[in-house]
Amino acid sequence: MAIVVLLWLAAIATAVWALWPASAPVADSPEPAVTPEPASLEGVLVAQLIRREITPAQYRHALGRLAERDDQRHPMSVPRDGA
Image 1 (spheres, rainbow, N blue to C red):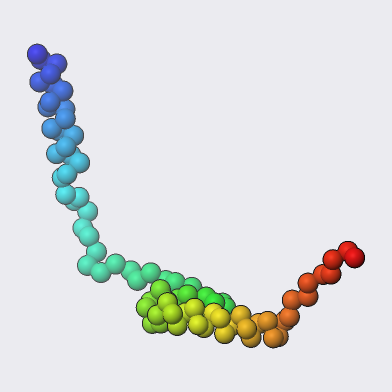
Image 2 (cartoon, helix red, strand yellow):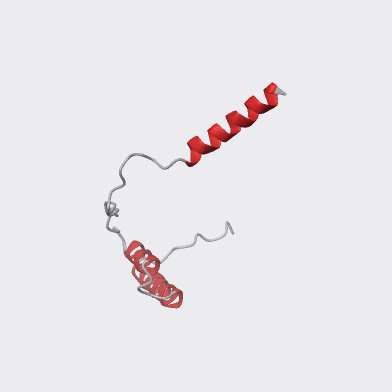
């Protein structure tokens, strides 16, 4: 019976220790997260999408236009079959 009481006391002590508020002072305002600037147009579009400056439809439209422009500037050459 004494073992059961000791286990209950240990469980209660552990719960109190886990739930006790931290004594370290909490900063009033956290440091703002520094995010690197995107290096490509795709990165800029993704950043705008995440910040909700553009809608997903606008994002897809801009990426489509970007792909068309890239295809005109750098067309992809597909090798012929071995015939």
